[in-house]
Every structure is written in C-alpha cells, then in structure tokens.
Amino acid sequence: MRALIISIMCFSAIIIAWFVFENYADENIHDLSKSIEDDIMVSVAAEDWDKAESEFKKLSDKWHKQKKIYTFFYHTSAINDTDFSIARAKGYIKSQDASMAIGELHCIKEQLAFLHLNDLITLDNIF
Image (cartoon, rainbow, N blue to C red; front, side):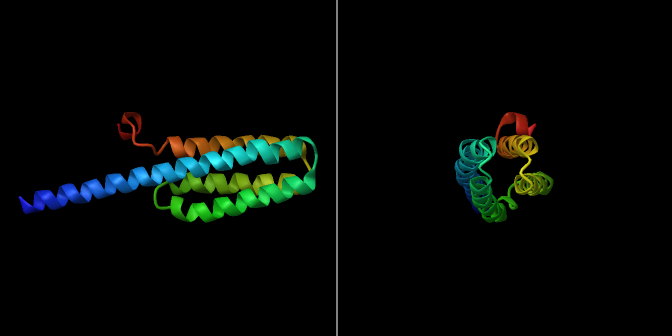
C-alpha cells in the first residue's frame, strides 16, 4: 500500500511539472512568435536593417536562454533545427536579403509552433 501511494505521488509530481512547463513554454513561444511577426518582419519588410538586427538579437538571446530549459522536455533535433534557422536568418538579415530573411523568419515561427504542439499532452501525441 505504501509503495502505491509513493508511486501515485511521484506520478502526480511529474504530471504537475509537465503542465507547469507547458504553460511556461506556451507563453514564451507565443512571445517569440509575436516578436518575429510584429517587430522583426516589419523591420525587414521596411528594410530598416539596424532595427531588424537589434530586434533579431533580442529574439536570439531570449531563445538561447529558454533553450536551456527546453532541452529537458523537447527533442534535441527539433531544438537544433530551430537553432539552424536562427543562424540562417541572422545571416540573411546581416546581408540585407529581405526575401530570404522573411522566408527564414516564417520558418522559425512554424518550427516554434510545431516544437510546442508536438509535445503537448494529447491523445494524438501519446498514441
């Protein structure tokens, strides 16, 4: 009986921690996506490269801080794919290539959305 209670408590702690993380990740990924759409893409489309670079640096710094927590919950390959896209977008913004930068920024937004959606606790993801 005692082992059952301990097992239930451990399982409950894991589920609660997962839901806390999902809430945290949802807010942060939404903020990153909003920053891409409202700040960086607007600056790139207007060819305001200085603002685009500074806004992108903020996004990149925020991503790299959050990534340390994401590595415990998300697949490494998905995190690496996002890192690669961020590196490509940085290069496109530095070289002032608007069409490639906007394309890569859209790619980052989609990767962030899939990163979060693929690890939600749903029946589709469990089975």
